[in-house]
Image 1 (tube, rainbow, N blue to C red):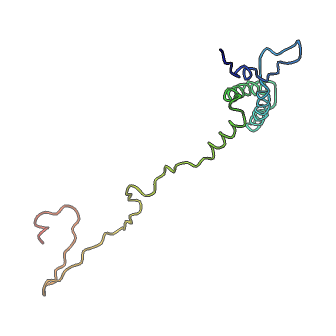
Image 2 (cartoon, rainbow, N blue to C red):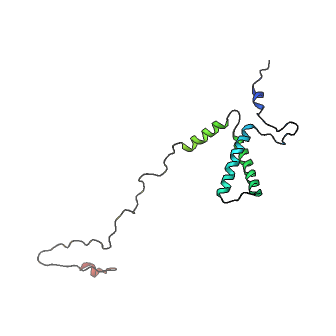
Image 3 (cartoon, helix red, strand yellow):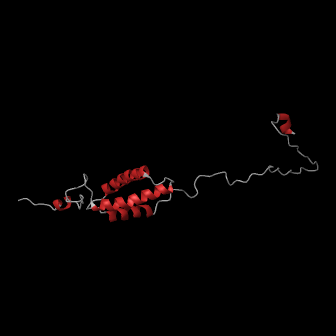
Length: 148
């Protein structure tokens, strides 16, 4: 006994082949015609924004771009995944909350360290009656200068 599935029902696409006895040489589903019209209008609008004038070649290239984008979009949709579901999935992917990759805190940085033009001088300790003032010598000190 053979059990037949309902796949044959879905193999028949809703396709408009053109006028009777003058069909198009390609097959396009109804959804592809709708998507193509919208994509063509968007393509023409983008061409105008880019400063490309309306002419034969600009319209031709717009049509080529429309066919490519429409084929790409229609390759992603089917009877199991309709256009509305794909658009909803696309919008949810774009608006989904993302993980924050920038860290708070982290490694120590010297960007907030204050730097003064003059370094602090040590306080002079008083020893008995003799007041001794040490004179700061710049550069390398010799052992005799270090004792004084």
